Amino acid sequence: MKTYVIYIGILIAGLLLGWLLFDDSSNEQTEHNHSEMASDSQIWTCSMHPKIMQPESGDCPICGMDLIPVESGANGLTADQFKLTKNAMALANIQTSVVGKSKVEGNTIKLSGKIVENEESNVVQVSYFSGRIEKLNVSYTGEKVRKGQLLATIYSPELFAAQQELITASSLKESQPELYQAVRNKLKLWKLSDAQINRIEASGKVKENFSVFATVSGTVSKKLVEQGEYIKQGQPLLKIANLNTVWANLDVYENQIDLFKVGQEISIKTNAYPNKTFKSKVSFIDPTLDVKTRTMKLRTVLDNGADLFKPGMFIEGNIEPVNAMTEQTLVIPSSAVLWTGKRSVVYLKKNPNEPLFELQEVTLGNRTGESYQVLEGINDGDEIVTNGTFTVDAAAQLQGKKSMMNKEGGKAMTGHEGHVMDDKVEKIDFNSNVEKSFQPVIEAYISLKDALIKSDVLLASHESKVFRKVLEEIPVGKRKQTRNYWSILHKTSKGINENVSLEHQRKQFQMISDKLIEMVRNFDKISHKLFVQFCPMADNNKGAYWLSKEEKILNPYFGDAMLKCGEVRQIIE
Image (tube, one colour):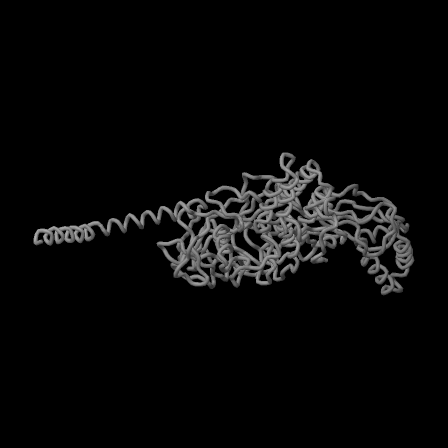
């Protein structure tokens, strides 16, 4: 019996010793396995189609956009915070930078403008007496004239009568000197010289025609009369510009006003002479703001003795801001900022050791080069996203956090998949030039819709190419102002081609419709009334929208099968 008790005691002691020795490594292995499983079970989705869930990265099967990782858990986070995996950070090339105060130096500001005539040197040549132009000695605009050159010969009945008065008064100058002097002064008011008056008096003959001479040298910039025309006293004949000096007028935006002052050095470059730089100084800053463009004029005077500059020539000015070497300021790169309506936002990285992010509104000051001055919102030492900002914003939208377009956070209600209808979504303030450039895009979209109404795959493919061509005609600068809408429309439309099914074409068209409706609903001006129409049976009974110029329902998602299925949900005037 004693032997069994000893054996049992040894066995229990061995089990206890093994548990103490190997429990930690077992836990570590378990944690490692869990970590591997979590990594292997990473789910990828589309920022525009949250219903898409795939186990691997790639393109969205609906719109073709790059898939982004879905964060599986966010324990211990505040309501506005969210996390991304390190794998997602690497694949999306998301980069962050620590904000710090520094001197704003070497940030040359580029201004655009054009060459105009120097108004101080411009002269309008007028007629000092009424009459008929017998001969005009200036043939064309752009002709050069010299001071004292004969410009025109004019017959004037008034001057004819005044000469007769002079000849009569000259015989009475001894007895009536005041009358004689009054007649002479009358002729002087018509810019006749003493020598001309003396010649008339000495000859005793009346001249029929009088000459008009150039009072300055320059280039005729505008002919205001033609030969044989009757003119009135003081009527302009020619506009003469002295182009020995010209003005370089440059546009300064409202938020740049305090960066410049008279006397600053500025470098001017032109497309005509790309290898030449012309140095000058700021001579004038317009005290008024153009309410349409929200810009003001900064001017410098350029010497044009070599006749290099032509009025109307486009130029670029490079100038250092006045506070470049003195102010210590908090600056961030422009790539970190997302714009929506009147707000500007950045994404803070809340933990230096974890990919933990949170949206932060900021108040920006002046832009110098590729950086913005920050007035409020972030502090010295904060870490912000400087590359991949749109990807981070898409992840915030998917997790129902505060985002660029959803300033309150929470899941937005959708009229159908991807189409945000919640009033939390802020109105997008599109530039008026962007709105104007998208009018042909709307027309091309309507043609694409009509092709799908006819259920014609080849015609839809053709109209899709036309749609892309119209998009590509929009200048690159305006594309960047569409907040990624241009690239989504362009990429999505590529899915409507002759090698796919009609069903697939209609799916792509649905995505195009969603994005275009979002844009148009935020436009201040459109060229004609548009109807937002909805079919509840499209997209497997989830419903789908489209735009039409007519109130009558013609369904692009079913064609003849259910041509009249749908209703008008909104009218955009």
